[in-house]
Length: 168
Image 1: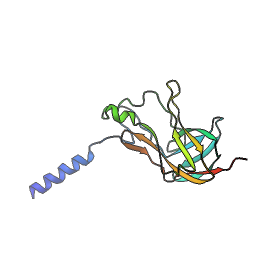
Image 2: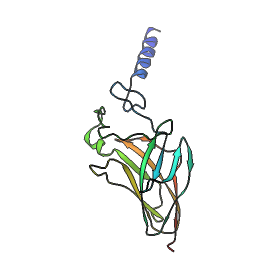
Image 3: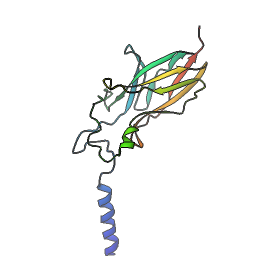
Image 4: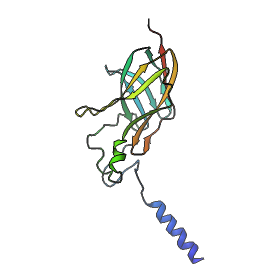
């Protein structure tokens, strides 16, 4: 009986230890948990919004057109989470290869209708962005995830819908 009690205390202790990335407060810094995101065009107009599972709008483009969108993640109150230059500080538990995988990941889209590319980050421009290229007329959708190393820090509840119309 003593051994069982010791094992239970040990397991309880292990369950209380923090592991990996933590979406709350840490001793080094505060991590904001993304609850949604907004996609904006080059003029700053909201093209699509998803927040706590609710979404609005459908992205519409034209065959042959490239739509450049910036990605802004939202906190629990629906406010934009500010992207900081040194946001990787305090994450020494990831190796250099994992750090190279930080950023956006796009999946689950039909590339015969629209190609979605993650914008390469420029040194003086730390905003995240995507390009949507209309390939052929039709509808598709895509999943947009915020990656940290080998895991997603944010995965949406719904895919982003896209409609590609024929050229006029």
